[in-house]
Image (cartoon, rainbow, N blue to C red; front, side, top):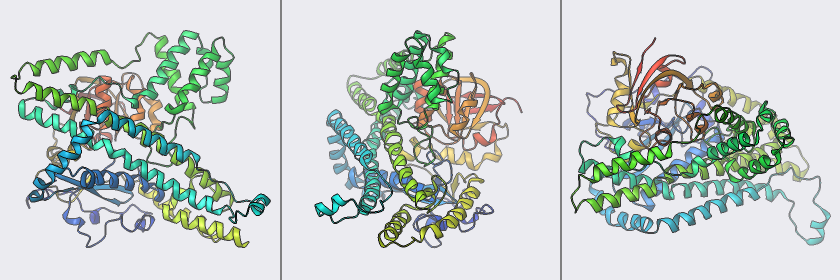
Length: 608
């Protein structure tokens, strides 16, 4: 990102200018010392944007682990693995509970020296893509299996006599301490794996995108994106499993078994008692591993609900799909239509090329299409599956502490930082070992109560979109493509009060123009309110919101670029989308009639 800015440019508030919500005083003490902005740290001279796309709610102290691991590991692949010529990593801070980022550019005089090594390393990956990606799946699944082997249980009154006989000479407390360290290490390990191919997926697409723009100066961004659409993605597999189960339930006539899906045991028993129900139950259980390791959130928060643990969620989705199947509606993605449109666009532009340029176009487009699915598929393996197991193990450890009297409420462990958890563990095992009372039960309940009130207060205030003076031009490619932070979009945010006709401007993320009633959704728990034919308006959508995309007409989000989850999913469902509006979810109200123009990136409020 170019950091030179002109004095005349408008600025966003600085971190110091944003008022602290009442009750959130001393919020900085909740997080590791290196995360909050500090006076004299140079942050005032940098432009920062809030990543509410991945972290839309304020952090509890333990939950910073997701942001820290993700952004650190993204940076290592840019800076140390691939040596991407113009881009290093992304600096990150927490302010008032939310994550802010500032991309770090490579000095112009250093770019050329990185090119040969970059080409050698990227060439190795692209030249061995299928084999290396198969190896990646083995590595990630191995890490998940290792995490599943970890268990946390309360220490016994005495070590078993067998340990005396065997000369084991350990009391079992090391299992707790080593297990916790191992859990953190394995999560970190899979976050490193996460970015091994993700940055390459973006690079392949950006290479094709840049080539297309240079070759066809007037080509719309969407036409480039459509040339890689219509693919099978593992991220869609959980939703596809539910659709298949709904079709099977319709064929077997099991509709009466789905009357009350909130009662999981009752629903499954009712289905099993019906003719053909045993066949459906077997298919349902088959889908669990691994596809029910899927969260209604995004995997970054300890409160996220996973299908495998809350089966009323997938059963409710199946019930709705079953209703639509019986009504004669199509619940499948329009994949054939997408492929036809993709091939039409490819043919149109191929026809404009000469014999010398055509093979270059085909090679770059082919590489982008090959790498494109990973941009979404990694979500299932890391954010959903890995983090689902991770949070389940954290809850096991939380229960050990609750049984020992360290705190009372489930998930109170999230109000400790990950390093404080290790200190609390040693406090627990020390008290147990010497026969005294640990300090934790007298210290943590009041401290957790204090911290919980601060987090609650932080949640009452939406984060500032960006901080400080933006650069004259935003050039960092990932910032543009993933988050939709472009020069034009930032200026649109700054000039929001000058939007006289009341329209909102964002990124044209998926083509089409529709009108419909808006439905504002801030949390996954609100998805049940979405009605057929409405337009979804959200801060950001999660990959797991797939079951509602068959009901809605279009999507509008506050943040996100051409390669954001919302943009990709909407293109694969054939729905118009405008992303990166900045404040769509707070400007538009549920029930308002709006027009979404996914061709131009414009949203109009037609009523009110």
